[in-house]
Length: 115
Image (cartoon, rainbow, N blue to C red; front, side, top):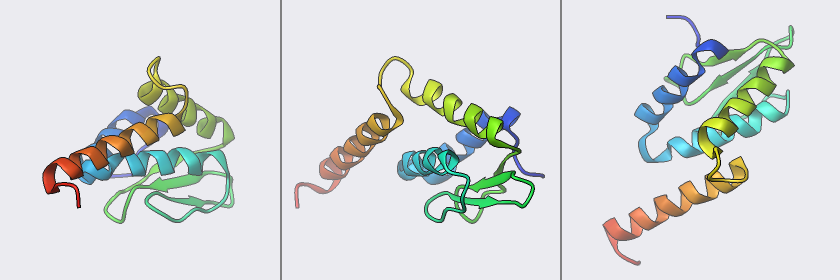
């Protein structure tokens, strides 16, 4: 199978949710941050910038990646993430990420107790 395209962004995001379990929010948030700056990025989500201006976002080594062909597609990707994850509930992706992280910590405390 080839790389995901912007038209398949929801399938790519669903793949991240399935393959990264409780850390999925980190991969998504780092993809959001990487898409803002057209420079290579390493971390949970890696962004590779090609000479033609396109970029490849990969959420881990097993991910075939999402290709964004230009700045316009990067902007559309960022806006899609805002709509999907923030909606009317969160004022920004940063607020969404903070809420997801808080939920993660609460679950860890519940599972393992307050250490």
